[in-house]
Length: 406
Image (cartoon, helix red, strand yellow):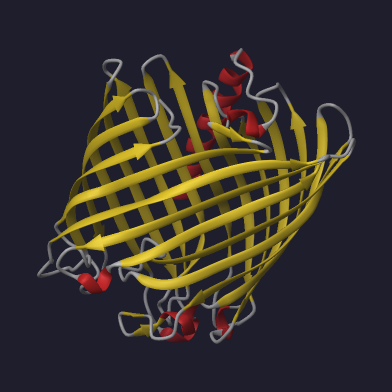
C-alpha cells in the first residue's frame, strides 16, 4: 500500500514540476563556474562556512530510557572550485566539519567530505572521470544510533554522447567501497563485519531536453554488492528509473524519479525484493515562499545480522516563508518507515520501525550571503524491538556564510 502512496506523491511532484518548468523564463548559467562567487586567475571558487546545531540535544545517544543531555555544536568550512584546461574542466568540492560535545567528549570528531569531476568538452562527446572520498564519524543511517567512524570512496568514469541538440546518451561505470574502522560496534554488532563491502555498477541513460530548464531522463542500472565478511548479504540488483531533472535557479529545481528495482540476493536464506523505488528532491520557489519536498524509497543494508536489509521510505517537506527582507520562518516535517527483511532461518516475524522528524525555525539575513538562525526539532522512533524506541529535542542556533537559496 505504501509503495502506491510513494507513486502518487512522486507523480504529483513530477507532473507539477514539468508543468511549471515549461512556464519558467529564467535561464540558468551556461557554465557552472559562472555562478562562482570569486575568481582568482584561472580559478573560480565559492567558499562557505557553516556553524549549526549550536545548542542542546536532550537525547544525545537516542536512548529509550535515561536519555543524556549535552551542549553540542557542528562547524566547519567548505569550498567549491572550477578551473579549465583548454577544452576540459575540473570541478572540486571539499567540506571539513568538527562535531563538538561539551560533556561527552568521546563523541567529538572531525569529518571530511570530498568529490570532484574532470570532463573533456568535445563537440559530441563529453568523457568524464569522477571521484569521491568521505571520512567521518556520524550516524551512518536512520537506524544506527552510534556515531561510528567509517570511510566511503568511489570512482566513476563514462561519457555523454550528444545525438542532437535535445537528445543525449550517458554511459557510466562505477566502483566504490564502504569501510568501517575496527572496533566500531552498535547493539553488540561489529559494523565492519556487517557492512564493509564493495559496490560495482554499470548504467546507461537517455536524456531528452524538453525545455531549456527541464530534462526527461530514463536510466537503467546494474549494481552488484559484495561484502567483505557477511557474504549472505551479497546481492545483484537491476533498476529502471525514469524521471525529470530541473535546472537550479528557477521556480522548480532539483530532480524527481520513480522506477522499479529487482534486488536479487545470492543466498537462498535471504528473500529478494522487487518493488517501487523513488528519489525526489525538488524545490519550488515563488515570491517569498520556498517549498522543499523529498520522497525516498530504496533498499538499505542493516547492521542487524538476522535482518540484513530494510526498505526505507522517507517522505518530508520544508516550507520557508520570507516574512521581511531580512527575516524568515521555517517549518518542516518528515516521516520514515523501515520495513525489515529477515533471514528465512531466523524465525523472526515481520518488523517495521517508524520515525518522525518535526521542526520549526527562524532566521535573520545579513545581506544576501549570511543567515543566522534558531531551530527546534523533535525526533522520534517507534519500534517493536525492546529499547529501540526513543524521542528527543534538539534546540540550537546556526550560522551560514556563503551562497544560499533565499
